[in-house]
Amino acid sequence: MQIPFLTQLQTLTGPTVNKIVGAGPAGPARMAAEQQLQHVLHGLPELLAAAVGDITSGQLLASYTTAREFNPAKIIGFNAEVIRQQRQAMQALHLPPEEQLTELLITLRTQLHLLRLLPDGQRFLYVAVDCRDTNLGIAREVMRTCETRME
Image 1 (tube, rainbow, N blue to C red):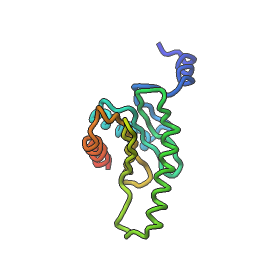
Image 2: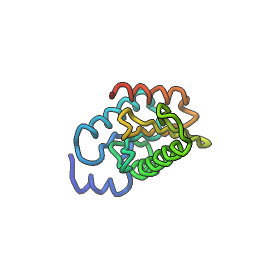
Image 3: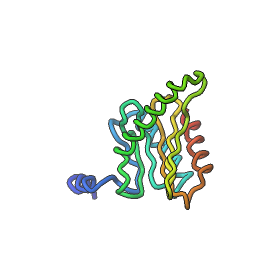
Image 4: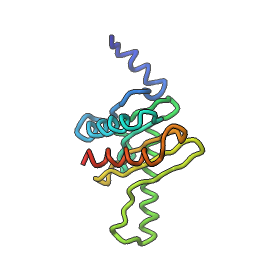
């Protein structure tokens, strides 16, 4: 039984865990983001968190997390800023136009955080995995195939 008050109360304790959650208004972008996360979750069932966000606004489109400590809305906002800053750094390097940012890897002692820009250049896919559970090559391939399936 769905009781609106109890559903709202659960959201006050942090993000919903072990469930793909769309954010923002319903529409094609949100639906595509949810499908991308379904594909990522199928390929990386042991992941810690995954999300799709808008680079320009830093807004979350959809997310999945296994722990309340991962706040996808905050993570996406900060990672969108990382992507914007990296793009500025690349402009300062005066790289040829065919050199485009495709992916960023943040390596921690026990975790890998991957940011992959989606083909439209306006959205990105974020995945966090435990180094002990997931191979970097596999995580990158799952993200790459997710990108090509959604074109």
